[in-house]
Image (tube, rainbow, N blue to C red; front, side):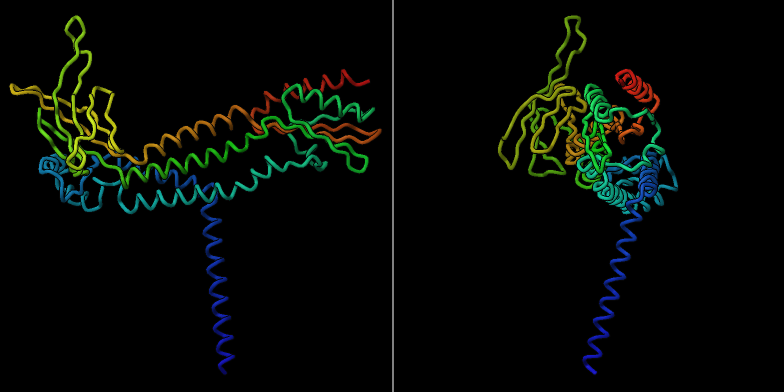
Length: 371
């Protein structure tokens, strides 16, 4: 009886494991679909647009200054409490926005993994031999009488090499096959674009969860710690205005000292569009006010750990799109049998019309060289 019970338990465990694996596969295939990824992109854009319609607070509503509460109530009136409750004033850290971002990241990653194998095989494992169907399905085809097939294939290969094609030829059972590829690395641009979107999303969510900014007002000679980074303080050493010969302002400069852990660590000048960087915190000149006893400056302190990822993702996206749009992959297939026909087909990824003229020139040149 015990053996029978153990067998039933093992069978149930296998069934549960199989059901879980099947469910994971269904989720994988669902999230790796392009239409699902497109829908999630649209959803995130709509949510981001909605959140941008409201002022976003850097501190929780329970900690916001009374002046901000007064401003919000003057703008939204009786709806302020309900809007605060659903989190519209900190919309980009709400669970529903972060969940949409997480789903988009997962979908982008799965789409990239789903397409990786096919694109990798297309770039690095291209077969020279091809079926006859390509000469019926390709957008550009030509059929020429085959005389001396070896000579014709060699002539076609030389012509394609002069046009920047990587050419390979192979004979199989009396049939000569030729394949030419130009910009054969171009399909990797698609993967670069997918990876760029993923990096951009990770950078955005990193900035949302870990980034912060605050303003700090410092009188001349005063030391003020940062609220978000209490170990970091800033001392105002003075403020001056650089002027042109006609007296108009040319630049505004704040002389500051950064104090970390009670010790002076660095000093420098902050001017317009020239912040001071210290251990992941950027200090920017926000405003100033002149008093009889000196100047008072307001600095904007920004910590944005996702910024490097966003820049890297932007560069990668530009690179991937440039490769995909301006260096399209073009393939030319040829097949010839002795005393038969020389079949030629071309499949460009983009710009079929433009490449059609080049394909006609290739065919005409090949006909001229025919004996």
